Length: 198
Image (cartoon, rainbow, N blue to C red; front, side, top):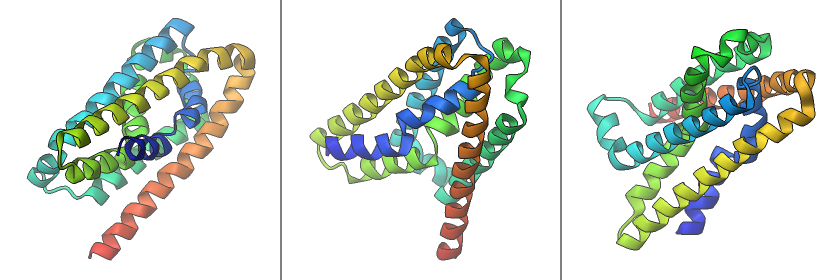
C-alpha cells in the first residue's frame, strides 16, 4: 500500500511541476525568503492533508459540502492566481514583504500543493485502511511526497540563479498558463461530478 500511496500522491501533487509555478509566485523574493516560503508551504500542505485525512469526512458532512464543491472552489482560486501570474501582478515589489507569507499559505500550501485531488485521494486511502500497517503506509507515503516537494522547491533557488530575472518572468508566464489549465480542469471535473451525481 505504501507504493500506491506514494505514487498516487506524487502524480497528483507533482513535485517537479511545482518548480515553475513556485518560481513564478516567488520571483520577487530573495533566496532566503524563497526558502522560508518553501518551508511554510510544505508545513501548510502537510497540515491540510493530515487534517483532512483524520477529520475530512466528518468536516465536510457537518458543513454539508460535497467533494465536487471543494474541488470547484479550489479550481476557481487557482484560476485567480493564474490570472495574476499571466498579468504580472505577482511580480509587484511587495511580494517580498507581507504578501510573501500569504503566497506561501495560499495558493502554494493550499490549494496548489494540498489541493482537492490530494485531499480526496488521501481520504480514500484512509477509508480503505483496515489495519495499523495500512495507517503506517499512508503516513510514510504522505511524508515522503512532502519531502520530495520540499526538495523540488529548494532546488528552485538554483534554477532562479541560472534563469536570471528575465528567464524567471518567462517561466512565470508559462506557469500561469499551466496553472490556468489545471484550474479549468478542476472546475470541469467538479461540474461533471455534479451532473453525474444529480
